[in-house]
Structure formats: structure tokens, C-alpha cells
Length: 231
Image 1 (cartoon, rainbow, N blue to C red):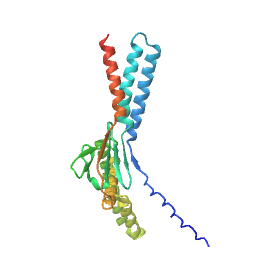
Image 2: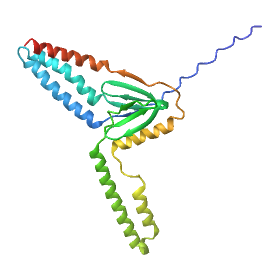
Image 3: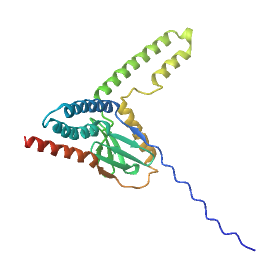
Image 4: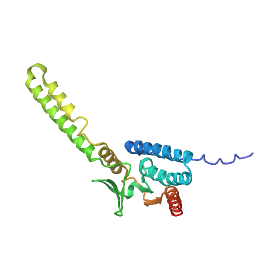
């Protein structure tokens, strides 16, 4: 009688990685696309129609400028999932596990502060003082409208009853105070930090420089300097 061979346990399915929440600046991307279109239009026109050194100067200028425009407008982004925060700034990428995040600060720029005291600016979430002032005006108008609604409801209590008062109060505070878009994103990141930090495993903060940006910029600068030097 043959004994059945023991079967190897089935492999465990891989642990799914949580999907990143991506935070970018739509205004920055739009501005970057316009600048790139303008630079490419002028540069290609100079390469095709230029004479003498002009095509080479145009190519060197494009090699120098295009990566810089991409770095400051299209490239910046913040990626957040259940395990870590990844900050992609113009010239480096910073990965911070939630356990290493001490706080988020918002003043004239938005920053993440690590437990070690290092601060990294969040380029893709720029602070807009104009947006804050606009949100403050909207909140003031909403508060004034809610006050008038309460006054009207009290004046007409005999006809509409209690429901008008409750409706006015609910309309005033159901969504909370009006906030600028960048401030709302920072509030969301603080909520993620509060939820994920206690369960976060230990890890180290890593910083990687964006050599894919540095290399063409340096090459373009050197080529421009050589062309200008030789006259």
C-alpha cells in the first residue's frame, strides 16, 4: 500500500499594497505645459530656420531649460498610502514611513517634519495666501447668511415652526468652515498621520537625488557655455 506524498502548502497570496493618494498642483502643471509648449515652439523654429550657430544654441538652451521647467512644474507630487509618505520634489525624492513623521507644518510653505527634526518642503502643495483670503471671505459671507437665515426663521416661527431653525443651522455647519484647497489637503495628510502612525512599522527616511534632472541640465549648461565661449 502506497502512502500519499504530503502536499506542500499552497503559497500565500501577496499582501496587497495600498493604492497611493496623489497630491499635485493643477495650476503648476498647467503653467508648466504652457511653458514647455512655448519653449519647444521657439526652439524647434530656431533649429529648423536658424543659421550658423543658432540651431546649436537652440538645442543647448532646450536641453538646459526643458528639464528645469519639468522639475518645477510637472514633476512635484506627494504620494501617500498606508505605509509611507513619498515626496517628489524638483531635485529629490524623499520617502518617509508614517512612523518617522512627526508633524505637518503650514506657514508660508507646507512641510513635513520627521522625528529626527528634518524638514522637507511639499512643492506640489503650495501655500496660497490669496486662496486663504478667498476662503476667509467665503466663510464670512456664509456665516452672515446663516445669521440672517436664523433671524428670518425666528421671525416666522409661528408659520414654519422649528424645522426652519434647524435647517438654517444645519446649512451653516454641515460642511465645516470654508478652507483653502492646500489647507484641506494638509488636514487630510494630518488625518492620515493620526490614523497610520500607531500601526506603522519602523523604517528609515530615504532621500534620492534626481540625477535624471541634473544630467541634462548640466549637459545643456556646459554646451551653452562652450558655444558662447568660442563665439
